[in-house]
Length: 266
Ligand SMILES: NC(=O)c1ccc[n+]([C@@H]2O[C@H](COP(=O)([O-])OP(=O)(O)OC[C@H]3O[C@@H](n4cnc5c(N)ncnc54)[C@H](OP(=O)(O)O)[C@@H]3O)[C@@H](O)[C@H]2O)c1
Image (cartoon, rainbow, N blue to C red; front, side, top):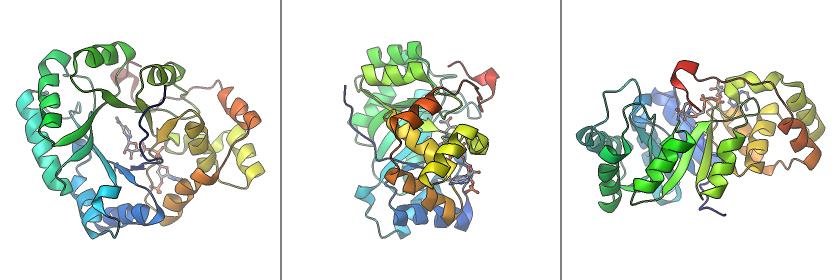
């Protein structure tokens, strides 16, 4: 099945703060990224908002994603979700959030929280609903009870965590899979397979990781602070891996999960 694509790659913003954060997001927009990923928990929505306001790129050309409900935040409730979204819109300086994810499923209860999430879509405050760190059974329940389609699933994915089951799920159920930590925060740079393929194409291992994710119809959201990294990652859109490259990365059987096991159920 084909699903509505989200501009790829997206720009991850975890840990980008202050003026240097605004510069990084503006650089990303200048370079060509048209999808920015933030979250209430990152405490940097205002940084993204400032970059959007100061950028020459029109707001309507940028797909803005944020998230509600992290395990570091209070329990989810209808009131909390609504307040969080009011603040996100203010911080980001936008009327409509293009994609609102439920960040983690901890205190999420589909029956209790979906009416509010669906209401936010009806009110025009949110364009699409997404979920992050959900398992297939959790997705099944949300898809069954939601008035709106689940537009995207965001999970950790990179060559050391290949998420075959979720790739198949996304394809079958027409939702976009978004890969966070697509460089495994640097862990993939030392993989001999990625280094060889990078050398063969005269590109960086970061680009190989991002291009491999794109071959799976997955949208990576690499985070970068320096202009060189911001540009390097965007240039992955020009890299075409061949079948042999893809098969070599697919065959990597070492697994490395960055998210704390205690919190992860997928
Ligand atoms: N939904 C969730 O629960 C969740 C969880 C984790 C992350 N995320 C999202 O996913 C985004 C990305 O994940 P992440 O930040 O964990 O990790 P990542 O994107 O895999 O890696 C970021 C690290 O790689 C470095 N880097 C970036 N591009 C590089 C390049 N071309 N060459 C060499 N080094 C490079 C960055 O350095 P510099 O900063 O120095 O450039 C940074 O240290 C986050 O920012 C956030 O938006 C979501």
